[in-house]
Image (cartoon, rainbow, N blue to C red; front, side, top):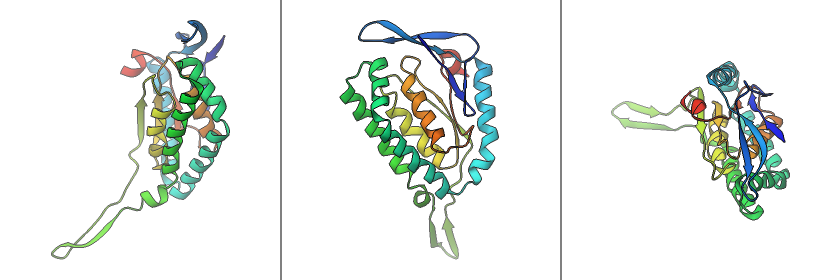
Length: 210
């Protein structure tokens, strides 16, 4: 039986000892144990994200988008392995799991357009001697708490866009089917994302409240 750790600052972190069983719903068998974060572990992830933010926000959007291009390629290369993880822990057929992943990849494709999306707008003469413009800036460290029913797709609705826009991210996926989410996050780091920009912490109400 394998242990599913957190992913903080680019490293796998075992946690403090609390854990939960992860079941294969087709058999009722316990197939993994997942670490459950306490407040100190959550704070560790926040500190890592805060430390990574200044350099990441200054990274040009074109370079951030290049990471997303590589990430998309890795997702497609590992499609079979990801679908298998989703199926084992959620219970979806492999066909449904693959379809879920493809919907998630569409969001990564959109994130690749960051240099165009982040241009902002300029309007001349919106009023007497008044021009107006928008300047899009990252806001800092953001978080996502996602449900069990789409462990790949729903997280991919969130963090590719947040990250490509210059923010750092902390993801708390469902503790019922966490393996595919962690696997995908590791691919993002493999694609060249700096340590601390993307962090994954597993947990229950303690983690959610934190």
